[in-house]
Length: 71
Image 1 (cartoon, rainbow, N blue to C red):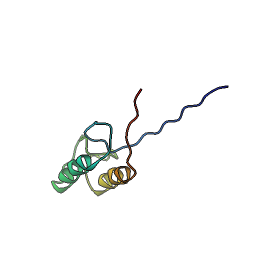
Image 2: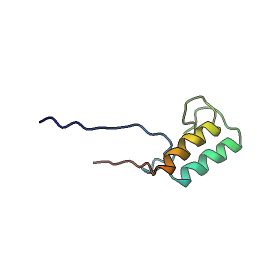
Image 3: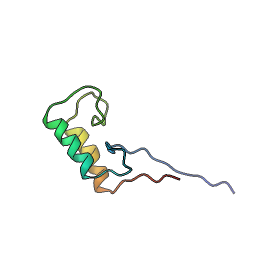
């Protein structure tokens, strides 16, 4: 019997602590409020701007309690 393992890629863990939570949302919100652009860890969709679309990605994943499971 072959066991299949599944995986998914979620975005929003700006602090790289294994969970998407309020800390990540706060960092994204601060950068979006300051209209920051460039290569930022808070730019989740890769358009070089931290804005509401990045916040929505992280907020949806925080709402679903997304976290990393590592061996």
